[in-house]
Image (cartoon, rainbow, N blue to C red; front, side, top):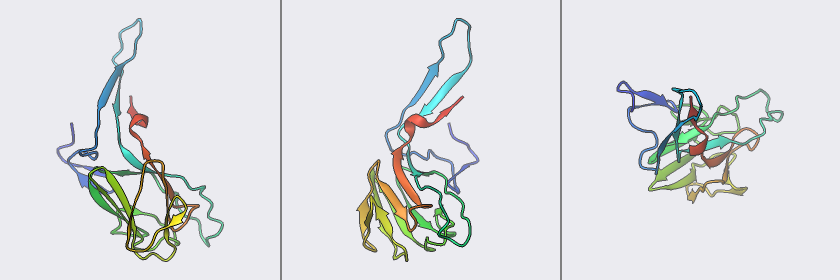
Amino acid sequence: MFSRCGTSINGARTTASPFGVFPRSIAVKKHSSAFPTRRNVLRVCNALVLQPAGDGNCDHLAESCPIPFPFYLKSDGTYEVGRQAPADLILEVPTVSGRHALIKVAEGQIAVTDLGSTNGTFIDGEQLDQMEAYPLKIGSEVVFGDENLCKFVLADDGEQEESP
């Protein structure tokens, strides 16, 4: 069930499932006990997320920078990565360009395109050619300009999300 008034996900207002057509399931587990309990666990499966994987070291920069949060990907969509709005994934790090890269999710495939960034975009250590789409697979690392602060791993986060 989703909010009728909308919910913000990654800064965008939505009234539909953020997981769209990706295969998903909801498992409700009842905890066995000698006494009756009302605590159920809701688990959403097969959510894709860019998990921060950098070491957070910002000694090479003149100022400290915020460490990014995990970024959840909808089943179909295009996300701009950059240092400032209107980017969908905002990385407030000087080594990230204003319009750094594009992430496209379509038909279960994920592609990353460098938009001509100054410090480059990398997948598993290989620098991407500008304006060419490269596939991103689960378990792959993607770096947007700074491997200390802007390194992410694409993960299937479905089994990790639980709510009491």
